[in-house]
Length: 434
Image (tube, rainbow, N blue to C red; front, side, top):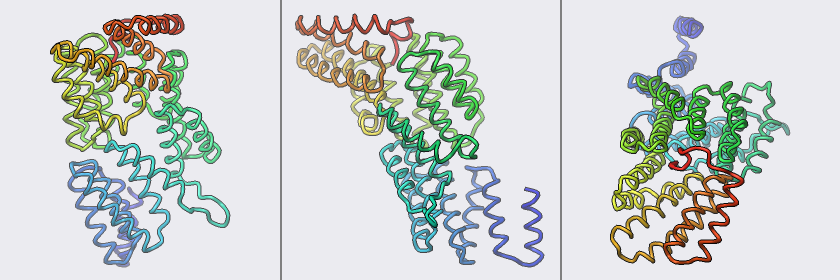
């Protein structure tokens, strides 16, 4: 900042408006994000850059303004309208670097707004841009971010080998001593954590948490709490999550909002797993409120599904069914395989509960639930969530028993026995888990 102030003074002495404009762009970078004063500064910078015919700075300012608006209360349509204007400037002035930045920012914003397919597409566009100069590929940080984003998306679909190949490619292009290597390091440990957690390989889960702490401490603390919850250590998990919530209490930075929502959902799941459904409602509703104010549709949907699961346990299946039917589509179209399976599992249970309560067309509801559970089991197998496969097979056996299908019930019971021998249930929280 001291160097910047000195450059401003020198530029003012010689009346160098171009230098002053570059200084104003740096002030945007140093200033506090997400406040009204910053928005005014950015708009002033864009106007002045246009007057001085500085297309690079104009495009940069527009992108910064779009990012700023995403972290306040602007609608997504308004945010992408600014990025569209930036794209026009980039194409008119052949600003290849800014095109990469635009696509990367779009990928991040689509992820924030809960559109994973569009996020992946934007990352693919980053990698498909022609950035080769004199036969040498341009290894920018943006390419590393795009590779990591695609690796995480493939891992969410259970395609772990493709995710590993993408990360290995990132390692070749961005070695450990490279300044951008922390991106793939973080993605690698997050993918390892999710996969090993599904496999219940606790020692490898713990190692992933330790490795992640080097590059992302808050992320590591959140995942450590999730690990403790899954392992059945509710008290230390609660203490960890409570500490994260307290640290974020006074945070107004919109960039951290998605992390806050994840912490709230993790706290809610902890209460659900320990049978405290009433207390869990507060955190779910808080998550929905925060997500709705910033148009984070996926968090709204997954939190609503979690709320429906709570209503199911509170003997309110009809309300839960209505909530599920309104919020299932975003999860099934943009969610991870694991989230899709959990949502469909909840839907099957709520559907059966409604039929039992009303005593109308009970057999049809049971048959529909059996069909849904076939898909649920298949999805859990894709992400190697063997303990949840066991839950699905157990519930399916109960459905066949209610239908009077003895042979199918016995087949499911035999499969459950085999799974239970390989993956025994070691704590009560796993039984109650959402």
